[in-house]
Length: 495
Image (cartoon, helix red, strand yellow):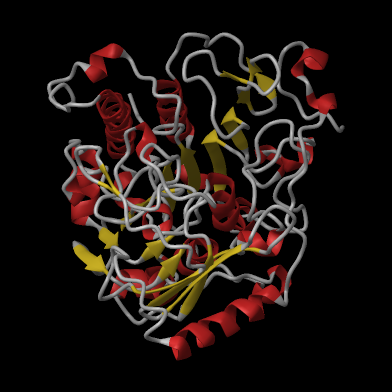
């Protein structure tokens, strides 16, 4: 069965623009949750991922691709083409019970593709708002939805807190209560396969957003995957279970692509594969040799594993080192792949159409990217991070703790080696960090003191973004959302 990965559809738009007779491609976007920089074998991991490797090695590997440090910020940036900071979503993960989501005045990839005749399907994790129905997938441009609203949940019972654990699983808007005990990766793979099987190409192309739950915590997978000879030799428990989870997802991707091939759709499909943030090393992921992990603005938290594959793309099997950000997917998919017009000013997009950059290795239109911006508030010192050219500036804390880093931290300021051991840097109270990412991709040398002019220039750009400040949403859990009011099912409670 399929297990989670991210296929982000980067289409044939360039070819479409050159020849109107060329049909718009199908788009398959696969997202693997919490996939680390060093978790796939095509990057040298100890975990074998043959299907992912096949498409990565045949496709375009994005080596300077950035995401956000947490799942909801990344997914909102992907769907809406805007920095999370510009939507009030930079601070917090949108878990069930919190009354906020991607603002309704924002478009989505699905909304835009529907204009161009695409059928649109969302499978797996949503994590972009569920307090009102209008924030849920079938109200945000998707024809169908099969998955869950929260950031994580049990893989078998499909339930989650923060009150008593309750069901969070939907087929469109209807609760799914008959799959207790079935592993979610299998269910999501099957749902993608069914969407492909039912697709009528005569009515237009499809966009499938396959957002797997894997490899996010909790660490759960059928024992047969842990006992697989490919995982059994891994010496520490969390990594071994993680291996099984990722292998299950890789198998799922194989099933999906075989289904595409059986229906003669694979060659007309663009596959985009991405993570949503860096790996959580405390639970078996690896970002080695990058510094830090999920929830940090260090490279291990925001440098994303990603690639694009398409049988008809003009240039394949190469490493792309152009600067690309997750906000670029919306304009790249809509304009570059689908060949549709997009009102950039209306939607105030932060993303660029980088289709030519990806497919032809032409120079990126993106000269800088805002990695994070969360202004100071009571009890919080503030944090910002930006990259311009070779340079990356962090102000505030590079990780998420005022205290000196410790082994076992959920967001360590250091390097987690392949064997799970943590190498910690000498502690420093510095709140200004400058790295030359081209020369020092693993962020071992803070050169802020040597380059005050560059620090000041990058701080000016941060202040520019700060001048567009809007309040970052951080509401508490609403007691009215308690699923006990809705038959033990997580349900939009403000309608």
